[in-house]
Image (cartoon, one colour):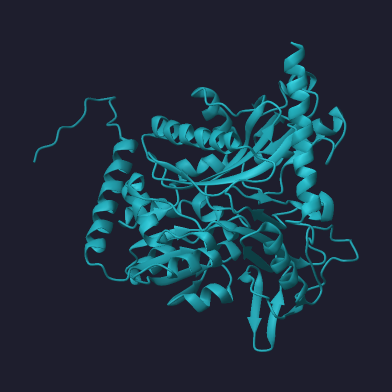
Length: 489
């Protein structure tokens, strides 16, 4: 084999796209050889929350049952009970993850939370020939960079964007604020679902908006300003191999801390889904629109990068009087939304992951039980409240779990000790009611939530008829206004 030195001043280029294609093909050959043996696989699960507990449960339902290896930043007793081995470590410690995956002969990995994706764990595993349910770091920008996603939709003419602007300085911000009646301000980066500032909720005046933008620019370097939309939000978690996109049943999350959507935003207090795989305030065309946007985004990502997105594309959408708009994408399952759809999954989870990783998702039939679900999070009383609030937790507090009345239970931030379970300052336990009717599912979830004792709280209104009717009435009013406006034109 011969080589030639480039002429002076010429630099040999490194084809990043070709490299990723080579590594992906190497990874798929490795996975295919393991599949032929039809033996239980060693599966790496990264994450330690309730979402990952639900993922672990779905994985071990597969046949043959895989051997689960859980890498967590803190111990989750529910995941530990399902795993063959566990390891506690930082999600930023990529060498430790690499060595643990190598030592345990991992066939593929499932990435739960966003931080490992942002840290590039999929890239590291792919270099070892280990595929993942989750995108490489460059594609995880779909979640980690609001500006990347807005610009992607604009560049490829994909519908769903609100009016928006991305800014690296204050220049131009005042002009956009003058154009829009109300705005939403978002940092460019991960904020745990709590960094969005909404006019009318978190601030009122133009001057306050400028102050928030200055603070975000100082911390993040880039800020996105969008028009404030009016409508109802829904979560559409889709699975894709970069070519085929399959939607799971839509779910509605509840960010506000207190009943009737009062109080500060949180990571999510609970969620519900319906047996007809719709939501009471949605029309079928709304879900179809969300899926169509996601299909176009998956195609645009490949055109932009030359790399297929393989994993979860979870779109946060809002149905408005003018149609469906994209609020944001997440590059993984939602928390709590994963607890609504994964217990209903009837397709073998390991086969589903393999199809995504090998680019054969078009051959898979994605099936879910036709049942309703209601998830309610049990949280410390002071969860989401300012540190000086009298309800704020003073430290770890013990909880007692009573009869669950048929509900599923998923651990989040709890510590199992010799004398019982202890909460941290975050969401502790998710309880999920599953039934043929939404009202029955809510009753199951509420009884289970009420059976958990300690310095705890939860939203008792999630999945109830009054709150859902409020959503339905809101959309009926908005759509009626639009029909009246259209008729007058």
